[in-house]
Image 1 (cartoon, one colour):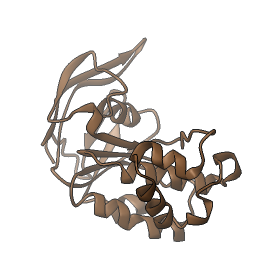
Image 2 (cartoon, rainbow, N blue to C red):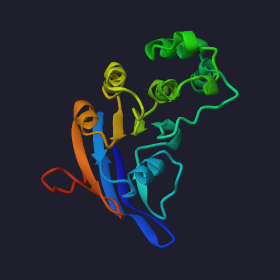
Image 3 (cartoon, rainbow, N blue to C red):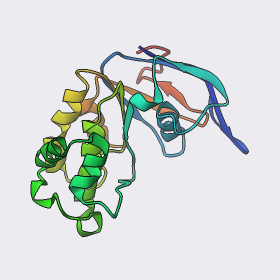
Length: 204
């Protein structure tokens, strides 16, 4: 299991995580819902190794074993859709397989600036979902996609969650309750998590 113990993250004049502890499940989707600015994205960045806490520790997780879908697509503009995926996967066949899953096989050789926002979002999703690892982090992963398309992509998240924990941050309540095994409510800063009954979990 992945254990977060007594984490502190602070910026000038603002404490985002303060003595924050949480144990993630071995698999399944843990959803987090809450207002912007309460510390949800900071938590994901700490788990991804993109930000270092000033105190505390994370046990059971190597930074290079984490994959993340950011709020921004973060595609490399000088690479085609296929090349953006191949850079992560290291395998052209796997890149093409994920393009097919995203219903974008015909866009393999198209550059990001020639793709719609929804198409760029699907490439970013494929990059995160297809990358092997011990933890998958999703920060508003379906932002900008219509409901019908989202429904076709949900099974890929659920399939990932059979083998590893998935931490899903979203403002979309229907999305959270469709995908999540458990949903926590976030408040802060500093970030505090509780379930609907107000229980503050150290372990889910």
